[in-house]
Length: 180
Image (cartoon, rainbow, N blue to C red; front, side):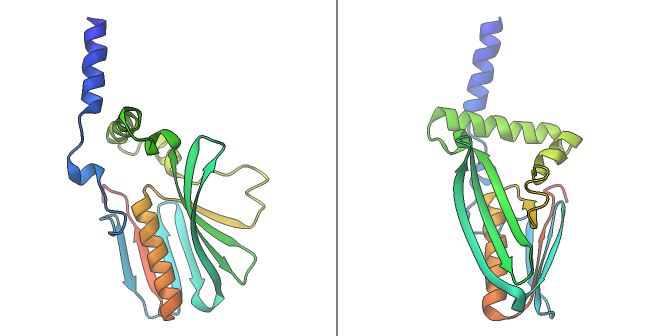
């Protein structure tokens, strides 16, 4: 009976989710993101966990990059550098196994999605969505950090910030919870 349950669970985890849930075109802006022009000469982001506002003429660079952290995590981040002394970092983290092709990556992605559905923003889920810092290294490094749930949200943020900076016209980006 135990082997049957284990086998049934394994098969269930391998079943694909409906296409609208698993495949988000990273070029499209997800439903959780709204991005609008504003009349102010600043770019602002309202993100789960906080807000970031910067004058467009204070931005000196905007970058987007990906890297492997400690061999376990793939970090994709957008960094906005300014004439001030703080660096804004917006990032998405995923385990290396989620990027793996084949069964292991599929099982990991499926299990994570099921965990998200079950948690429905419990305290543990809220903590997992927050930016991670280590005292005193990152808390005193003049870095403002935000964690996003998906690469699609991060790409939308990069597009919004770079569009505002290039055009000199303000933009307001908001990343909402999926339940809203």
